[in-house]
Length: 111
Length: 117
Image (cartoon, rainbow over all chains, first blue to last red; front, side, top):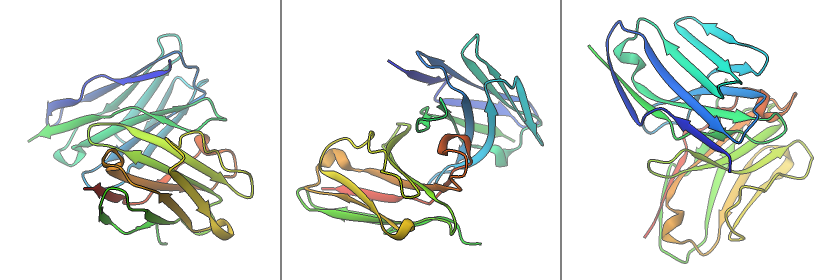
């Protein structure tokens, strides 16, 4: 069955370091991969979308990679700040199907 | 402009009762989605409306769940004969719908927290 795994439930890092979150998938051939941020008590907020033919995408301090051979996406936050603390969700779709979300990784950036 | 709004923000009900959850999408967005998020779980797709097309109901967990979208705008998710396992946050999202839902940014509402006693 299709499966999406985000590397860990929780990740703690020191302020200023680069946070790297992992999204792995199996039995799936996504054409699109999205990353969302979710704060407690709120709905997810879109961050980045990357297509299967794109290796990397950047937005300010964020960088996403998409490796269809490894079936993996990496999400990086450089120069992390306490305000980056949140849960980060990856979501996949083949394009004609609804987005399938992972369970998320809760990131805590410690000052 | 206004984002996606949902009401009520919280709902407590007794097992066996029916509940209706409302979603007001962003004006002009033709695509609307409902998701469910249980504690410690990812977002679970429930149903997807795109313009005047028949909705994709493939995620509805049982026939106790139904949804309508009137006039291509407001949507109502109805859960009949609620069970304790229905307790979750129900999230609504909308997108422009111009190029197909999964290829676009989805804008989420704040969710309705449903507790079934």
